[in-house]
Length: 316
Image 1 (spheres, rainbow, N blue to C red):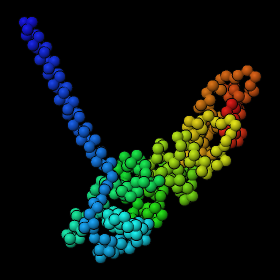
Image 2 (cartoon, one colour):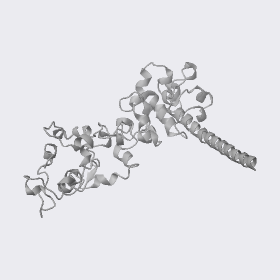
Image 3 (spheres, rainbow, N blue to C red):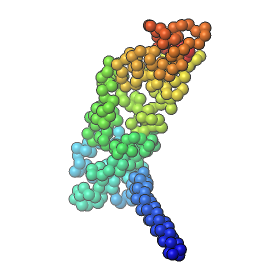
Image 4 (cartoon, rainbow, N blue to C red):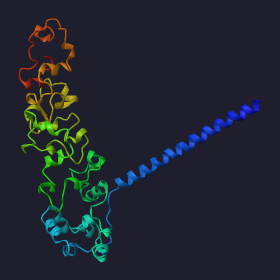
């Protein structure tokens, strides 16, 4: 009986180990495939360098006259003058080698058409040239890349609605087509004037990626982008508002729009201050004026008389 029990226990342990090993292998296999697929997508597009595979822009013009004309009117036309090799010039710089396409009588399967392919594959074509640009160099870490928004979702080489940056539509229209949650903010009583065309989303955000949250064109405190316009708030000040070192301007202000003056998050300045300065509620240090006790005053005084003082006074 003892031997039977021992064999039963050993069998159960062996079965458990085998099941665990099999489950581990099954779990790793799709994970490995996912990593391989991700690595492949993150690889840069490298065009073939054999000159015999290319036919040149003039050959493309014979069939695609309208596209060739629009190409000559935008900045990409300079590639035809660069002499870096046929794989980087003209139509074939984007669409790839055209010889097989021409020999096949215009067979679209034998050339890259930017249709019926994934967003990342499209973007990799563009990044082959634009990967080192100061605006596009962080695109692989951007939210747009991670969410399969391709370059051609916003840009059009042959039919741009806005010549600057070859945009498919005005910048605000493009941004609001996806970012519907923030669109109402720009219709609030106090807002940055995006709808009026005086400010653009890309003044504050880099759509091609950055190191900061929400692709802000700024430092970690997110205030540098604000100081481009609000230079008078940059200081230096003898005593700085501590929130500027951690959260930046957005600690007190809603950057897109607000129903409150000066884009403040709360209608009453005191309530906004007390969200952080909670020690001022219900107690007052000796020798301090009584109006600092916000709880005892029927009509408490405002923490700041002018908004600029918030950067120079921290003990109000």
